[in-house]
Length: 368
Image 1 (cartoon, rainbow, N blue to C red):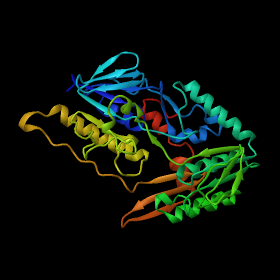
Image 2 (spheres, one colour):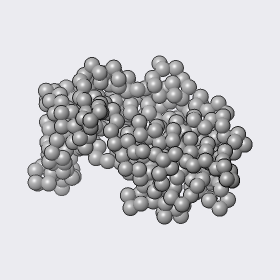
Image 3 (spheres, rainbow, N blue to C red):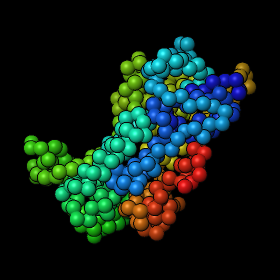
Image 4 (cartoon, rainbow, N blue to C red):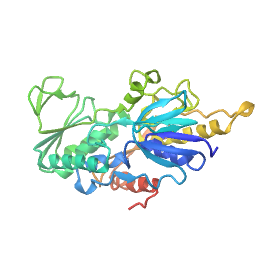
């Protein structure tokens, strides 16, 4: 199996995990347009706090012991020749190829450009805009919107901050009404204005926003945390539009293989598995795909082993920080219930360091 080639396209949470799992068992090439891993969990704070500007960037150079990292843009998967074509003209042969290109997030949770310097410049611009804003509007009351509104409030206690959400309660997509109430109580106690059932759109005048009832909000700064888009346009342009569903997600079977292909997998935010698109799910998919890839490469003939099937994760621990010293933790418990824990647990588990030491260790660096 060591003489077989596995090409992983995309160096996000799922791609990094999968490449690391297979390193040493196959010839692994991890391809990404970025020079560094982007720890998106730390990006919202990096867009607000100058001390966190560099925290989301972790070099790839210590991730693989036997495999290699290729920085470049993938333009095509040539299934007839079993090669991955890069924009540079390089072609990477594969026995198995994995699509792990993730999803595009709204700013500031986005890696802008292709270098850490370009992304850091974008973070600095957000920080400067927040520092002088009189009124900041955050649209979207899910985990990202709540977290960002809290970060802005703590950075700018003198500014007006509004969180507008189209749903009836904050964090309602998590299924925990209690967690939503805790988030609302914290934000309102810190003078964040909450607008529920408010579907926002840009107003007619610059710096204005309008809800579905026609109410106008004036804000000199806005952030939209209302969803993500799968990074699959390149697949459509490369002639693989039949791999995608109407939402642009890669269609996979229960073994996480692209439908109709035994040697093409897709993991993480990019595929159409119906589950919470969170980091724990991406890591779980990567682990199962690694097992199935090993099974595929090692098996032959009548002794071929069957792949394992993936079970979607519909209930997973979820932590929403309220800055570095607070937050709410939702912890699934037997019976279908969810335990809701407060600030101390949330701070120790995530809010203080945003899991940055953990990800640094995953990429071969010290926690500091």
